[in-house]
Length: 163
Image (tube, rainbow, N blue to C red):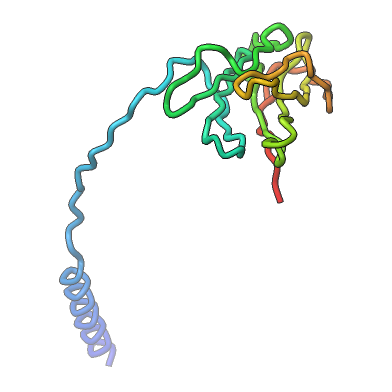
């Protein structure tokens, strides 16, 4: 009885093994034509945002404290915002880290930044765009939130508006 059971199990295993091998097809790697196009030579871009104003411009956040506009694949020479004078960027996780545009940015011109302040501490600040849509008014800064941060690391975060 035991030998019949072993014989039956062995036959069943052989049939299943044959079926598995029959239906398995070899996987062939396909060549992918992937090309990267460098569109900017900025250093340490830590965030990219779209203002949602219909212009389709991208705003590139440079850790050193500047935000540049990428318009139709071309970076504007003049920064949209330059706050290097108030941003501490001496450690790998410090600096200007994020930008978020108000949901009504198209009409209000308000946007928010997340950065490490000189002397430490993390700041959320609100700014206003100037009359020129490609330039922010750096003097319009209003601090919304300031958080003590005694360490130079773990400062990351992304600002965004949600539902």
